[in-house]
Image (cartoon, rainbow, N blue to C red; front, side, top):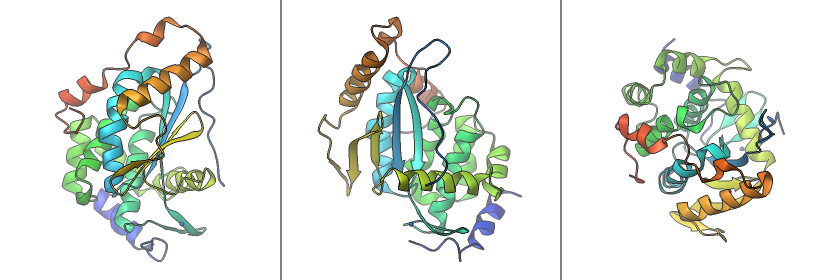
Length: 254
């Protein structure tokens, strides 16, 4: 089943996916085998929201270029669960599928969990940059090709309505956002606490500042508190900018 078939398959659940809605919570941020404790960094977004685009391009991607190795980064999605088989999204069924595509791109790059941001974030940046084109097959396949994402696996995940497939992980993601009280796209959380909100084209409730360097500073401070003075603190992450540039992905942070 290809992506378009998956899209129509999900649309036939529209009695489930009406245009605009606590479950399993993964353990993350735990010490690794080297006793390193990474800082949880999470954003709650909607895939066809302009504020999500701004959040990723203006804040998250530039910050992760510096501190990816210090954080456990995660994207969670905002929707509304109506019944057991009924999930709705503010910008309609195509947004629900867009959310699923983001989640599937991360899923097919696991283990570990959460997966390293650089393995799927270029795909997410590509989708959000021209989010109005979601879920056009040519557009999605192009983003996958540029980002090193296996489009066949992506399509299979998006088509899977089982508990471990795209629809299942989407439900878990929506439940998580609801449980954590994240209702605005984009809500940024650091170390389990709300750090900043992008809403209506403006940054709000960003007491520590809304620039990438502000987020980098806060992450490094929390990392140091958790781990003490580690040699890795001064090191940059996994050359996220180089990865994106090599794949010719356009984003505002360049």
